[in-house]
Length: 237
Image 1: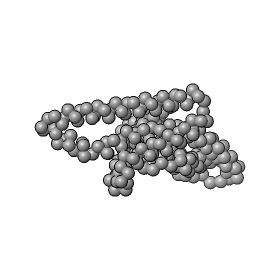
Image 2: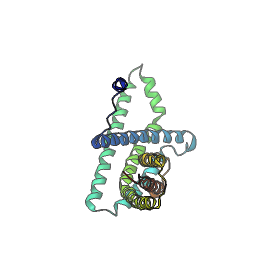
Image 3: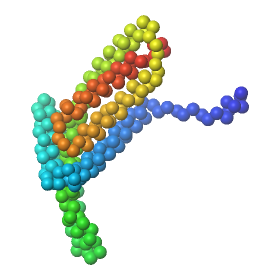
Image 4: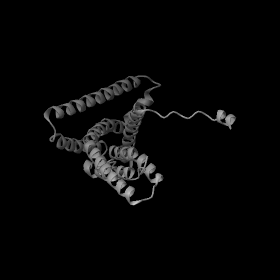
């Protein structure tokens, strides 16, 4: 037995709070980047098959609607907070414009070369798709701001779910209810993916919809998963 115990592999050390926090931030940034690429790809597919007559006007109209939703949300906050959000979006727009202008300049230089002229001609045929990218990116960052404004809704839903779940846990504890670790593990592990799914779905929508219609169903599901996870905590530790 002693020899077998020596041959066992060492237990994997669980990451601490800081490690989990950094991992969560990295995963969130990764999925935000995936959402940006997915929203651009969906816009290009729509420009090809679903709204070819609108072209780049479709993304421009989306940007106007999203700015309207953002202005409505900013009216509920202080002037300083509103100015900070507007300045941040303005800096992002300037950066996008700077990148786009550099791409135009580089491809214009390529057009002067015989061997690279084909690349530039292909770019000229795809100008509508390239022109839609800055508008989609601006829509993306505005929606990220709207998701940040919706975080209190997720927090409140989680608090209500936790309180209600603890009450149900005490009732189950004193009433002799059965344990179910599988339900607890499923509910606990689904909380973060629910939030990520809400972000990805809202950020990738090819149409402009009021944020409440997309975010609130996920807020309710998020609170329910928190409730179930707290309800199914062990009765005795």
